[in-house]
Every structure is written in C-alpha cells, then in structure tokens.
Amino acid sequence: MDTLSPSVDALSYVLFSIEILMNILFIPTVCLLFYICVVQKNLHVNFRSTLFLTGVGYLLGDIHRLILVTARMCCIAQQSTPLVQKLAVVQLVGAYISLFGWLFVTIERAIATVFTGNYEKKCSGFAAPVALCSAVLLLAALACCVTSLRLIKNVDFIIMGLQIFLVVMCFVALAVIVMFNTSAYRKRHNAMMQLSNRYQLDENIRGSRYLIPVALNDVLVKVAFILLMAYSIFFTDIPLGHDTTHLSHAYDLLGSYQRLFFGLALTLRSQRFDHLLKRRKKTTKAIEKQATAVSNYYNELRTMWS
Image (cartoon, rainbow, N blue to C red; front, side, top):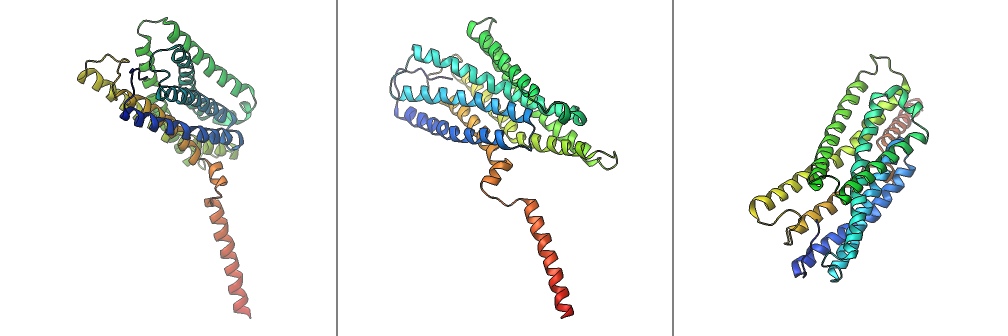
C-alpha cells in the first residue's frame, strides 16, 4: 500500500529508512537463492525452476519499492505522478509472479508425491519446467490485465481474497504432503519399495519441509494484514487504500519483511549454503566417528598383542 501524503515527517523518514534497509538486504539474499536453485542438484529441476521464478517475482516487487521509497524520501514522487503509475505495473507483475510461482512450487511437490514411481523418469527433462514456468507467467499476465483494465467489479477485493486463499491452501497442502510422504517412507520395508522410489519419497519430504517455514510465515503475514485492515475499517474513518497516516507504512513493512524472510529462510536452510560455510554435515560426523572407532579398535588390538 502506497503512502501519498504531500509531506514526509521525521517518523516517516525512519519508517522509510527501515523499509529501504530491508529491501537492500533482500537483493543479495535472493541472488544467493538464485545461485542455490541453479547448483543444488539434489532438488528436482522442476522444483528449482518454479522456486527461481518465485524469487524473480519477489525481486521485481523489491526493486519497485526500493525505487519508489527512495524517490519519495527525496520528495520527487509524493503524489500520483507518471513515475508512480509506471512503477505500479512493475509491482503488479512482481506480486502476481511471486503468488502464482509459489502456488506452482506447491503443485510441483504435490505432483511429485502423487506420481512418486514415475516422476523422476518422465519429468526430468526441460519440457516440464518450461510448462510450469509458462503457466505461472500466463496466469500472472492474465491477473495483471484483469487488474489494470478493471475487467471485474471490485477486482482489488477479489484479488486480495484470492491471495489469502492461495497462501493458506499452499501451507495446508505442504503439511499434508509432508505427512503423506513420511507415512509412506515408514512403510518402505513392508511395501518392498524400490530404492529409486525411496529416494523420491525422501526428496518429497526434504523439499516440502524446506518450504514449510516460508508457507507458515506467509499465513502469519496475511493474518497481520487482515488485522490491519480490520483496524482501519472499524477504528478509523479512512477508506481502504487511501490511508495517508503512519499506519500505511505497516503494509509496506509487512511486504518487505515477507520478501526478506522468503529469501533468508530458503537460503539459510539450504544444503548448498551449509556447504558454502563449510559446515560439517551429520553424515560427515558419522563417518568421522566410524573412522575413529575403527582406529581405536586396531590400536587396542596392537596394544593387546604387543
């Protein structure tokens, strides 16, 4: 939500500065996430492609806010100027790409769960990621056209409801995917499951758990967003979308926080980031313990026979 006040007071400068700092921090974070999506081969290419596109959507929204807030702090774009109107298109595109990208990240995990036995073989080429990313871009373009051209009455409230519904649905779906795959993995020995299917189940669990914190945070952000709207409706006389008080900064800070959490959570919890920081993995520790045990065993034998 944009602040359109004709003047910027001291508190607004502070709030704008906080938002700019968060937006700047997001850029290197999401670039590192892009690197992880490219090089972390133990995650499926379809998963990495849709996640990469989701990050692109968040990056567009971040760049939009960074330019707009900087302009407003310099008293260039206090009112609805052509600059603000042009930047609004970038905001729309980024918001819809990130929304539908996240939806298709979840759909990809659901497809991998349903077709565990055949997914790795039949969906490992370039056709599937191209189809998924094309679907995201087409839906984003359609939503942008509907919103910009006002083809539907009260389209803003409809889109808002759609966002809340999709965010909640993705969180519930990821939780169900984790539980379903975990249950199937526990029964792998009784079911005489092939090794390739076991690996696919493990990837489904690992990939979905990787996304759960972001999905939960998205739900919490939407709850906070609804509470802010409820406060505006019931405790102020200002129509929604026309708030020029300091409360309007809360919406923008929520958006910046959501983007930053997305980048940080997916980057810090990735195996590639662990490798970059040279963290010791559990498997490495186990091998070291095993090697130490073997060494101690032979040392004891040598001492006993000497």
